[in-house]
Length: 223
Image 1 (cartoon, rainbow, N blue to C red):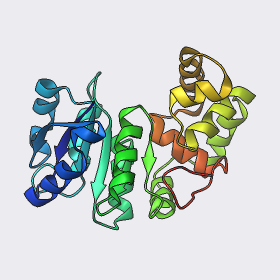
Image 2: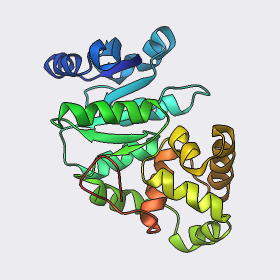
Image 3: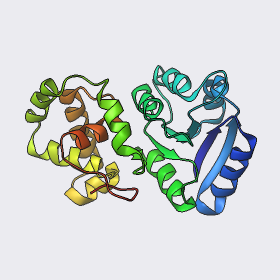
């Protein structure tokens, strides 16, 4: 059962999410917050596996709350939830440390997959707006020339792992595909994160897109 914390200022939205993320589908809504101000306390008391966080809220918004979570040694991953086609705000969520984003109104099956993916340590970038959001994200990233040098420093196996991260595969899936242990996969990931100066898995997905290791496709995963 995946423990989910809902953070959204609209009661109607939270009610709808409770109806979609039901126990029969493997989800347990352990708590709700009407804005980002109560997220830290909720995480400490409820220990969720993943946070489904609205982007725009009065008071403490999604970007501020996600940034505050990033300062902690142990924190659940954040999946940004929005109705807004606002590339700068969504890219801001990625820079703050979110593991991805999904648009409100997606089919229930897609939301299930997104929450599971992020809870399992993966990243999820909604294909409807991925291209534009990545463009906004790149505008705040280091110059590509310097980052290419890091890419060249990767071993062939590390490049392979990076491409699979970009495809949306989890550590378990990567290990099965490469016929290695999950511990070996984690070691490769730590090495490539260090070499490329990447903060988290979402940044690795962006890097894989940016360097043509993977391209967007009209589905939850990427080609």
